[in-house]
Image (cartoon, rainbow, N blue to C red):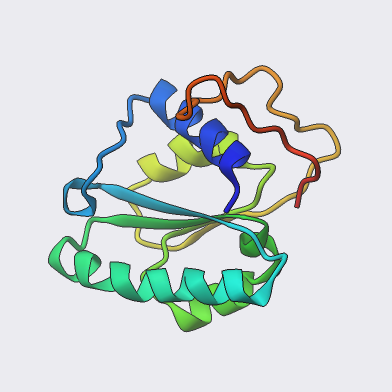
Length: 140
């Protein structure tokens, strides 16, 4: 959905000693980076949350987060439709992810403030496609 932001989030979490795993069964954290440009994209996110639900039943400590602009626009619906979500973080608050993930409470966390100044220009994105890079055209 949003490759540029995903690369930034990977970098932030990597710097906080989180590692990517190819298997969801091995994950302690699952983040869905979202876009709300089209309703179909939002529908797919809710479908993926339904699939993640069974992993959370097996591992109740699994933290599930919704990131990106859908988090900002659909914040009420996310918790209403899916109680398994622990974090809802807007596109200008990714730096807070390590802090939010470190919290031990089971109360859902919101970080949705928009910033006129956040560009993540000091973060080197965790590139996954060799020489191809992605740039952000618009935020939120």
